[in-house]
Length: 260
Image 1 (tube, rainbow, N blue to C red):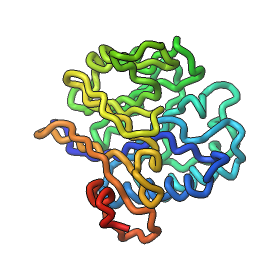
Image 2 (cartoon, helix red, strand yellow; image 1 turned 180 degrees about the horizontal axis):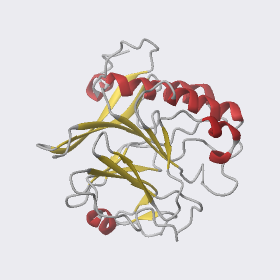
Image 3 (cartoon, rainbow, N blue to C red; image 1 turned 90 degrees about the vertical axis):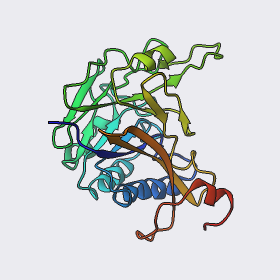
Image 4 (cartoon, rainbow, N blue to C red; image 1 turned 45 degrees about the vertical axis):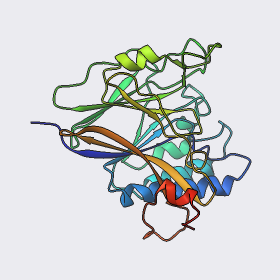
């Protein structure tokens, strides 16, 4: 059987529980959840730093899980450097014992595959236990299963050729070029950036608000995986308006001031 055509919404760095503008970050994530339906996506990828720090109260964890529970599709979460996965991780606290069935979490430090056979999709990622130069977010990625799309999630710093200082959780251009995945969904940067190398399509989504030009909109990546046309990724902006009928708008419209 051939690959299916699927759509993925990709976000990262939501930083729920942040001390500054906490209400706005929650509104933004609620709108990310609504974008999944508006964009007719098959799954939501949240690529690290869902939470701002390990001390966020249970109410914030419950908010995240309540939002996920609004969706029928899988929500795949990768821990990042602000919400590390270790023996004291916030992902092991009581609220996550009652997580909705569509919540999927990468828990293996060496890397693991979360398979969604109904979509013909395998997702791979490494849970981050320490944010150090020794942690390699792409190390150990397996080859894709025959007939399946493979999407990798990685939270770390992509090193451009002109970079001089090695950063923690480094992602090197040659690693991206050699990655055996169809799409590499990245987190750690607040802005939307493409870092594709050779045949590997790779993008940072940026945070919902940080990748948007103002506080009246959010930004997400929409990745369309089509067996005929390949992998196509575009940045989509949506109004923060609570009206669920608001449709996606173009970045050019925002820049021109034509949409409010």
